[in-house]
Image (cartoon, rainbow, N blue to C red; front, side, top):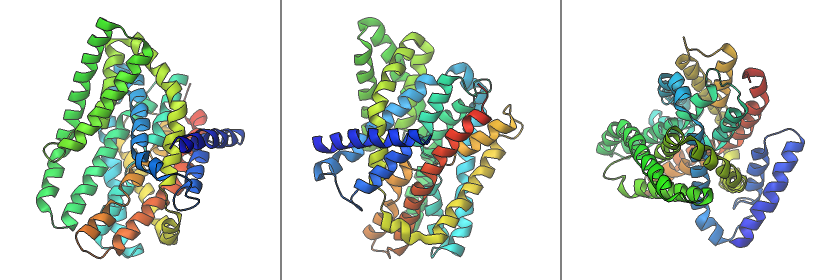
Length: 398
């Protein structure tokens, strides 16, 4: 496994440097390296590396969300609070609705199977979007109206909503109607408990840091460990009660920023350094999940359905921003920033196929869903990253 990590560092840094030489976001090179070295191409990684890949991705995602929370101030969040709530579900519903309608016409799927596909494709990728937004906040871009903060606040809720929809549709598809009802009811509970749990832990952290005053590095390690325990807790009790561990992680950072701002800036600086390594791990391992042959099988119809879904999502974003304080340029930027797919699609793309196999059903719909999910990563992650980077200076005031 040590060899695999060394490979990630060396080739990841090289790919990042090459992309930046061409004025492209470094994550594009990391995703490409991941695809090439993944099990569906060169298959470079050892079995041990593959076994811990999901845990490494989780750690990197925790770092992203902690940094996001530590950059979201209460005053800025107050400007975008209501819009962030709308952005957490309306664009997702619009994208799911469009794909559900066009899925049977373009792909060999039923309406319900198309809804499952739509719920997987509808999740925006925090892994792609959040690092950009943190960078723009630090640079002061879009600060007046808080456009980057809006995207930060809404992205994690958007993911949670899409995952709940996917689980609900799968429950309907496999005949587990009780599970569907429970999942729909549990969504607001999951969000409320996630925020409440994160706020409580954030307050506890502030008290601990005041009393013992550990070094900044130790504070970061404590925060990361607490966040990882939250995710583990969510996985262990999800059959009893749901709560959003990722939203809780972001809330921890938010509370520390509000209660102990100097400490928050210190922690954010340390996490920024750790992120240099974490982003290499995250994007290369996400790229390694991409099944290129399956993606190619999706063909032109898969590409069309992806772009139709993005059109529906863009309309949903514009509906959320009607009569808001954001300028036309800022609305365009928010729409662009809400397009990239990667993390949820890599994690959830194969779930319907596995569920169909477990239920003894025909697996062809699951294979189509997986193919289109993979294709969405290949198309939207690099294009979205380039678009966000290229338009930020033109569309956001500094």
